[in-house]
Image (cartoon, rainbow, N blue to C red):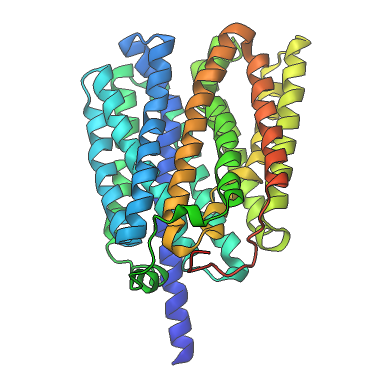
Length: 414
């Protein structure tokens, strides 16, 4: 009987991990698909650089508000309720964005999709953390960030043949609509999940309020927010603009730029695979510092090679793949895990939502700053700025470190 109960619990947890991972997979797809669709959208609507930047940032902007709101609501009304509602919004506006008739409607629809994406970032890692045991919590939480890479790579793998073979007015619509199918499956599965027992236990105590954010030390907030800001400044600033940057700088064709960006994203996922089996042994902070530093170092080397007029596409692509591997094996995995572990249950989702929102501000700043740098300093300047942000992430992570590895999650505000 005991063995049966254990097996039942394991099956339930795998389902929780899978369904939570599916949400993050959809997030990875939708936050990356704009890099693919910018090419046909620019052709169809004759977008200026400013309009491209606004469209690339619309989903990120929505995720700021979505993360902030959903985190607070999930701490107040429960994890499961918000997990269901964010997918309903996601499905509706993914479909509407595919049917949009002009540029402004595309921007608006992608902004609302971003609300749902930000919500999932705040809730899914929180949900998985509250079911996982301390000994293997890092492995299971990195599983959902691996799913992000699968979604991102999928957007490029689908996008390259579709954008290359279909009319611009059809290709971007298909790319937006594809996300509706797995999201609908995920919605059905989420209805079958239980509420977090940790949240239920804490919520029954009426003296505990998720709004007592001042009771958490400043060090925790700094560690949760600033490294993730710097990560997204670099990863989204480069990732969302990379297909356009590769094409406009004469490195490759439309198809080559999309596939090249997809390969770089793939190596980020391989980095997460490397980190998965080491997080619970080495710890989060050491892996995060290492990944930040090595990624920045590689970006500096690539910048120098461009300044020396060494402009082979295969060399640039290989360097970006290596940089993404180091990023994925460090902050690309850990930045979404640490906030869910260092804050107590009454404010866990709120804290993760705030950290998510701050990271998305970093992403938007990265899109505009790196886009500006490309115009004035070309691709080498973009790589130097991104490399500096990565190295700064290593310094901040080490100086403000709080290691949650193997620790039991707290249910009380300190």
